[in-house]
Amino acid sequence: MKRIIMDISNQQTRIALTENNILREFYVGGENHKRILGNIYKGRVENILPGMQAAFIDIGIEKNAFLYVKDASDSISIHNILKKGQELLVQIVKEPIANKGARVSTNITLPGRYIVLLPKLNYIGLSRRIIEEKERERLRTIAEECKPEDMGVIIRTEAQDIEKERIVSDLNFLIRLWKKIKMKERLYIAPRLIYNELELPYRIVRDLFTKEVDEFVINSKEHYDKVMEMVELISADLKDRVKYFNLTHKLFTHYNINSQIEQIFSNKVWLKCGGYIVIDQTEALTAIDVNTGKFVGNLSLQETVLKTNLQAAQEIANQLRLRNIGGIIIVDFIDMKDPQNKLMVLNKLEECLKEDKTKTNVMGITQLGLVEITRKKTRKSIDRIFQQPCPICGGTGKVISMNTILIRIDEILEENASLKSERNLKIISHPHLAFRLMENEDNILKRLEEKYGIKFEIMQDEKAFINQITITR
Image (cartoon, rainbow, N blue to C red; front, side):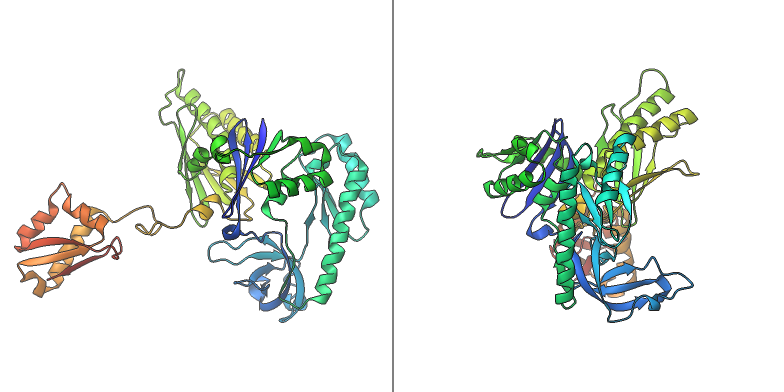
């Protein structure tokens, strides 16, 4: 059973997509998690970077957006395409992440229920999930007959087996929307927001609430009514699947979602066979390591390795969706000598990734035996939304070792003759570090006391950095 569960409170909107009660996708919205992906702005060119064929665009938010001019080439200077101070219509294609500003494009896309309108590109495309050739031909014919000559369309998966009238109605709505956007562009002065993409609950209705979803549960009466109105307009036959949850206990608790969300933040994910994968995310890429763990198998080493890798491939595809991991992903599967087994694992990975709506490519196996995957990065991953760098370790996941601490104390004393002449000294440090010094089983601090003939008193300072040590009289 496939279910969308929408938990709306004053502080946050949380939406879970589950399959047979297993969490597959998780979305967060609200005042503290406002998304600008898909928004359209009238921007102004601030700086041009000829060496990168790019420009910074002021769109009225904290950081200037980055525009990469793909049409520029070595023979055509970017200065012939853009001028400083020029005003132009741009759309957010990648949200600001960490210290990087948003990325924008001048190729505007307007998504509807069945169609994506490309107002500036004469093109017809079809979702790769529509497999049947006869249906693809029918939808392509509809697009050719109905789209404006100077515009393009992409037929979405949900258009499959939908009558022509509903598809045309969706297209006409998007054309009217584009005309309103163009009118605002003429009236407004840059920088200015021209079009705001739908709020999270209604994007979910448009993009995820398909005939494959058996139930849509929502705990807000106000949003339930609005969702019903939207469903009435775009897919009236799905209205009976929308349910209002009015019980007193928490929605996510009722469907056992909270415990599954907590597992998202663990870097170790166990497999059914007893093996596990370890996920390490960095700024540049994500590394995933596969291990047999407690699984020893029954027949042979190769059988054990193959079964672990096949389960890992399925779980990796699930975790990429669930955690919204984007960019470059490197997977270190357990080494397999049989080429046929390697192919089976790659095919399993590609098959499972087909469920992912975000564009994902398996690039193959590198010379080092690693599998390289690329997944389009458009918004923050779940861990960046819910977590912040640890104030203790500074986000490294590690703290200074005991030996390093004591070497540092020794160096301070060696370099400061006046301290060495004292009989009593205070070591001031963070409470966590102070506890480690007091509880050190090797008594290395006691050896330092004997070496210098000094009695140390350990003092705690909650404001001190974890690796900071101060020695005073």
